[in-house]
Length: 112
Length: 114
Image (tube, each protein chain N blue to C red):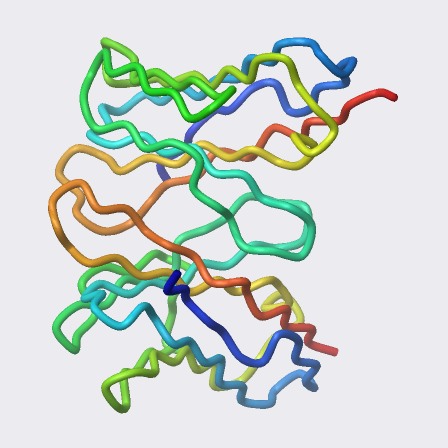
């Protein structure tokens, strides 16, 4: 099936550091979404991107839709303890109206 | 703020039993989805549903699975004869269908098949 490659798989960082993660695909996507999932809960949407080159911020989070339409990144600036969790990218392929394809997730751990 | 709700939050069942997972999507939404997430793994698409029919389904969604919108509010996922490997978190999602509208997820049902 269609794959999204998300990296890194996990990150150990100090509070206050900036974080960067990305997703790539071999196919063209028309939508990129970034979700955060806390343990035992459903994914919560952080940022949605709909246009190549689009750069969108949500507080300390910034995400970009790659120009090639095959990648996206998420940056978190000045991380705080509540940023801990698993971040997923998800995308909708060109020509598909329905299903989201998901990355494997990036687990963010903040060292005290 | 409106939200997607799911019941039960946890279900334990014996292998071979039927289970029905229930979802109440956000009221003005038109597109409905089921996803599953095996513990520690990524979210996987199962099926999408629009206008009272399945619009897209994955290879995971075989003949053991079915979906139904029995009334104006509930959206259900039935697994006819559960297998051990069906143990997972099952998420329902919905969206309005407007251009650029994205999917809102419920809190999930954790299914454990023994």
